[in-house]
Image 1 (cartoon, rainbow, N blue to C red):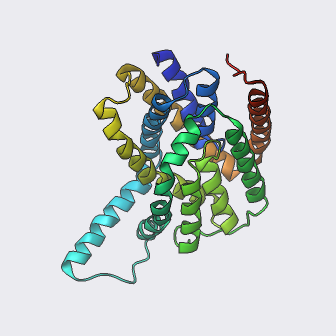
Image 2: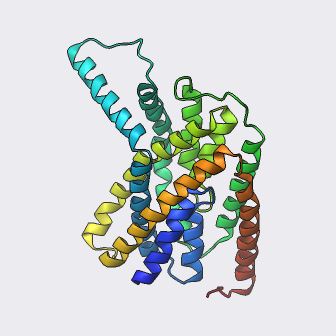
Image 3: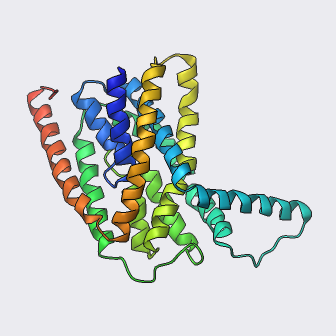
Length: 287
């Protein structure tokens, strides 16, 4: 992969990872139409997530720092034998809710190869269908938002678990992780800003886990990676991702997520149509 291609994919990753339009789906479409699909493309997609992961750390550094401090305090209480069971600080509740949200990933781990194969194949019909499913979630969630939603202080384990299940399904190419998890949070009754913050924070362990799983293949050299191209793509994903996070915060606060639903419907229908055409004619569409 050239540095230019990596930069383009980094921009796509940075924009679409946080905007509710599916980074995996858009990267899959780009790789399909540019003829760069395959195992190496899948590895690049995972590496680009590291750039957007760093963007999450920067954008939510205050919340993450508070959780780290609280975690240290909890460890101190455990070792001292004096656990404060009455403590209900938002940071402590977020830690417990984060653990609950990650439990469903244990089951979805066994679908990793399925997700990877689906993203790396030469068929884009599945991507199109998942784009349409994301659009449906965005539309439904916009009609379920109520004033006075639950915040970090009173968000329940059911809210966290439901968002965690959605995160486990989200690796399907075309199903937006941010869009689907935030939408499920809103449907469950979580307050807008909290749904955004919790969605992005709970994505940190998932992305780290995915990269750790792929690290042996990168180190072993079974898949050739251009270090300069990977670095360029990750840098682009970082800076574009920071801008995208700010945009999402504004859009969610002002209930503008449905704008993306219509975009996803158009992209989804186009992907399904082109995919069916390729199946019928046996001719791959390239640009």
